[in-house]
Each structure stands twice: as C-alpha cells, then as structure tokens.
Amino acid sequence: MLYGYTGRITIVDLSSRSFKTIDLNEHIAKLYIGGKGLSNYILYNYGIWDYEPYTPGNLLVFASGPLGGTRIPMASRAWSAFRSPLTSILGGSNLGGSLAAYMKFSGIDALVVKGSSSDPLYLIVEGGSVEFRSASHLWGLDAIETEEILQRDHGRDTAILAIGPAGENLVRFASINHDRWRQFGRTGGGAVMGSKRLKAIVFKAVDKIVNIAYPDKFDEYLKDLTKKLLPDPTTKALREGGTPRLVEIANRIGFFPSYYWSKVRVDGWENIEWSSMKKSYFIKAGACLYCSVACHRLVESRKFNVRVDIEYETIFALGGNIGIVDPDWIIVFNDLADRLGMDSISLGNVIGFAIDLSRRGLIDYKISWGEPEKVRELIVNIAYRRGKLGEILAEGVALASKILGAEDLAVHVKGLEPAAYDPRTLRGMALGYSIAGRGADHLGTMAYAIDIAGRAGGRLSLAEEKVKTIVEYENLGALMDSLLLCKFGRYIYNFQNMTEVLNIITGWNYTPEQLVETAERIVTLTRFINSKMGVDKSKDQLPKKFYEPVEFEGKEYKLTIEEVEGALNTYYKMRGWDEKGVPTQERIKKLSINESKIISI
Ligand code: SF4
Image (cartoon, rainbow, N blue to C red; front, side, top):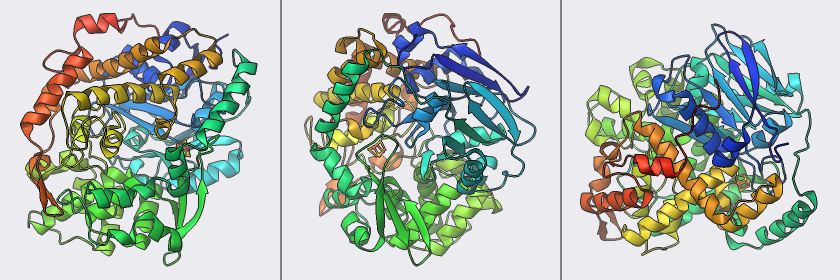
C-alpha cells in the first residue's frame, strides 16, 4: 500500500469518451511527491512540447499530494498543469478550497485529461471511475452559476471545477473556478478546458479516509503543529487582515504597481487599504478546507449588491494599476472576473495596458485612469471577445502588443503578466520574474517575501546573498507546491518539519537533504521541459518598462540591465545550468531526471 496516496491516476480521453486508471508508481511518487512535481513529470513523460496549447493533444493534469485530505494545517492546495495558451510554455496554477482533499476522497491522486469533445461535456469522478455527461445546458453560464447547478444536482459532498464564458471563448488567461471564489487563475487553464469543450468536473467523495503509515504519531504531530501555527505572527497577521492587509504596506513602502507600472503608489490608496475597507465592506473571514488560518476576506458592496472574497492581487490589478481606488467598483470587477472566469492579475494588466495605449493615442478607444464604467464594459467585451479591442485584449498583453505594434510598452515575461510587486523597489522580484517557470510569476520564488522582510542585503539588493536566498525559497516553494502546502505557510514549514510530516504519513525515510534534492529536481525538470519549448536566457528578459526609473517620495529607483544579468548568471551557476540557462546533462543525470517513460498516456 502507498500510504498518503490513493495510488491511482485516472486518464480521460474526451475524444473517445473513455478512461483508464493506472497505478501510481511508488518510485515516481518518491521522486516527484505530487502536485507540481508529479504533474510536471507526467507532462515531461508525455512530451508536452510536441503539442500546441489548443490541440486535442494538450494535456490538462490536476493533482493532489500526499498531505491532501489528512487535516495537516494549510495542506489545502491543489495543482493543475498544461501547455499554456498564454505563454506557449509550461502552464500551471495552484488553488485553495477543497479540491486537494476531494480528489483523494473521489479515489485518485491525479486526473489527466486529453483529447477534445465535439459537444460540451462535464465529468463526474467517483471511486476512480469517470462518467461523461452532456453540458449543453451549462454552456454559456457563468462559472458560479455552473457550480451552483452541479452542486444542486450532485450534492454538497463534492468539489467542483468549472469554467465561465471566457474559457469557452478561449480568452488566453481564462481561469478554472472552484468553491465560488477560488481559481486555478494563472496561465490560462480555463481556455485549455474550453478548447476541449469541457465545462466542468465534479469530484464526488466515496471514502474520506487517507491511509497514514503511523496514525498515532500523526495525531500527536498534528496537535503540535496546530499549537505552533496559531501564535505565529505571520499567520496571525493573515488571520486578522487576509492578503488585503498588504495594500497598506505596499503603498507605504512603495511597491504597489499603479497606473500600469508607472508609479509605485496609487493616489487615494487609503480608500482601499484593509482597515478602511474593513469598516464598510467586510462580512466575514473564510478558509480553505482544514485550514485554521482563515485568510479569506468576504466583502460586500451594498451599492451594487455584490459579494466576493477579495485578495491583495485583485486590489492591485483591478484597482491601483488601472487608477481605481473605489472599493465598490473593485468588488464589481472582482465579481465579473470570477463569474466570467478570468485571472484577475492578467485581466487588470491587459486593461492597464489598453488605458496606457489609449492615453498615448495608440488605439482607437478612449479610456483613461479611473473610469469604472468603461472598465466594466471592457471586462465583458474581453470575456466574450466582443468588438475589435475585446478580441485583441483577450489574447493577453504579449500577443495584443504584437498585434497593436506596441511591444516596447508591454509588461510581461514570457507572455505572463506580473503580479503586484514592482521589481524596481523590490529587487529580488527582478530575478523572480525573470526565471520563474511560468513567466512573470511571484509565487515560484516568493522573492517578494525576502525583499519585503529586508532580508539578504535588503530590498534593493540583487547581489549573491539575495540570489542564494531566492534559490532556497524557490526550493521551498517547489516542495510546498508538490506536497501542496499553502505558500502562506512558508514561515511555519521548513525542510525539517516537511520531512517529518511526509515520513509519518508515507512511512518513507526521507532526510531533509534528500527533500532539498527533490525540490531541486522539480525546479530543474520544469526548466528542462521549458527549454524544449525554446526557453533559455534570451527569454529570461524583463520588459523595457522595468528598466525605466520610477520615482517614490522624491527618490529615483532604477534597475540596471547589468545587475539583472549578473543575478541571472549567478542563479544559473547555483542551479547547475549552463551559461544559456539550460540544465546541463550532468545536472539532469545527477537529479535522476532522465528516467524512462513510466506512465503511459
Ligand atoms: S492560509 Fe488562506 S489560502 Fe492558505 S490554505 Fe489557509 S485559508 Fe487557504
């Protein structure tokens, strides 16, 4: 028995409406753990680089991990991976809620979807088996309506994934939604589902027991961990203010991207910082399944009669970055993004880009900062690809900038639009955005956390000590994404206690050093797959805008090409990659990546 796992992977072929269930190989589970590691291994094993994002050959992988469903605090995340229609490289996203547990309760560790259907479908996964149902009555509905209908029809003891109209219309940054306000947001998984005519997936619980190798030790460990978690200052801060508490810090320190990356503080930020929003909009806190931190913040606009769980990133993307500081409108935009099924970070970036171009007279559409009615219209037009501009912006910033001849003004790395951390005042993020496995991503390295805490030489350093700390954080993050621990647990979890908990659950004998090597394997495998899709140093480049100076409180902050170049070279060396940023054969071999094809898709 494979403790901690169901031991099963289900592979669905939508073209033939068939499925098969295979055993999860223990050797592979030990090498890649689950979540991100296992998903990326499956894509590597399959040769994902041979399949374009919108072809039936593209795979969609959903994975849980050995901690999912065990009640370990913050082990509430799930992973999805695919070839991204937004970036054309490896796509992936992490989501909270109840999916990680319910995948296992439905009898599987991972679900692999290939092929495409001629008619809209949804899937029911139960006991490792799959039922194919028509989704013609759901096609066209928004993601939240879809989830409500499926929950009504299949009961509450389920976890549901659904796409909205944006996914159906192949908006390249469409999300996959879950638990009403949770998303696989980044890199366009919703569009891949839409291209396969797959509207939703229902995971039905059949057995809620996860077999644990040492149950007595586990109960003790769980008690201890929970005791440690509650008084920890970072989890306390999250419990009190959720992620929106960062709005104040970002504007006070000056890293809150505003007016499409031209400033690092938005005028009127006091209206959208948490203590102010809390007074007039806060309803209650919420949590992912089995998480006592409860960082979700449910807010309500009484003016528009709309409720959403709001996050820091959305307040940046659909607020400061488009010059809007009215919480009522930000709540409306958040609700639209959720219902229509779009990643709010990419959506806010693409709208900010359009406003910037409009103000420069480069597009035939009049919009400026702080025009909420026009933003609302644009959001809907993008989701339905309505009108010339809606159609172009639905392609994401990178492709839109090519169509509009404005590549020098576009802010993205490898096609992915960045999150709410300006790298000119948080220098670690310059490296973080450059080398992250899915484009300008903040969570791969979590470099912003190092910067904000002033660690490793301070916020403006990109010297060797900072690079070394980023490598350590990236390793930690890769392992958390594979065990499927929430990244907000980064101050609680470390390689020592992650090893202890993994060994108690699985009965394995990992050492912390071996788990560090596992994390390095996952990071290097991700890069190796991307290198087969053309990623090397030439693609690890920041947008021009990040090299323009930004002013904050009378001081100018300027990032130089030389410091980023130096950090990149140091990073490649530390990773054992060559000077072009490609993993060397020696490194691949040392990390046991070149395994023969074990999983047959
Ligand atoms: S800290 Fe927040 S996002 Fe993370 S698992 Fe807990 S409730 Fe979910």
